[in-house]
Amino acid sequence: MILSRGSARFTKSPLPAQLRGRYPLCMPSFLEVQKLALALSEHERATLAAKLIDSLPNRNSGDHDVSGAIRFKTLNSSMLRRVRYDPKKRFLDVVFSTGEKYRYKDVPPEEYSGLMDAKSHGKYMQMHIIDHYDVVRLEN
Image (cartoon, rainbow, N blue to C red; front, side, top):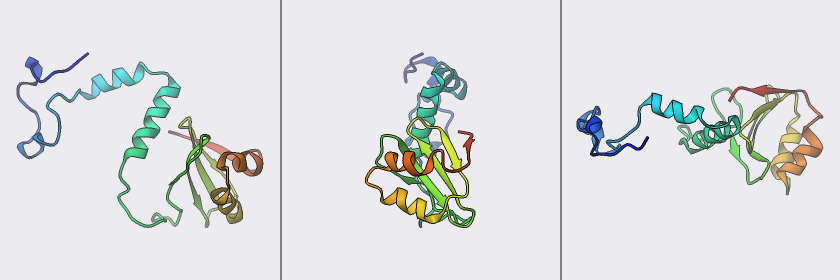
């Protein structure tokens, strides 16, 4: 469904006057977006969700969140998209390029440092972390 400014459905903007200039008049409804998203494969939805999350601005500055965990850091890797580490709880959260998220448990700080310093993050992940630590898949 293509929405256009000229359609009768969009002659009057539902947005308050102060927001009308910032957003297009022809924004699709939630149901229309949901239908389009459900038409995608699971992999395409995961990729889209990960891209949307990556596009969100970081509201807080600094490397750590309120729990003490290091904020997600984006990696230049074909295998890994983002990682974060909590030195207190010793978990490593990984977002793979597919959009899938995993938490590796009881990971020592040296492993996180090694991963971040590695020439190839993907190779380091395969050689030192995958199959070496307990892992759980996190919901997307």
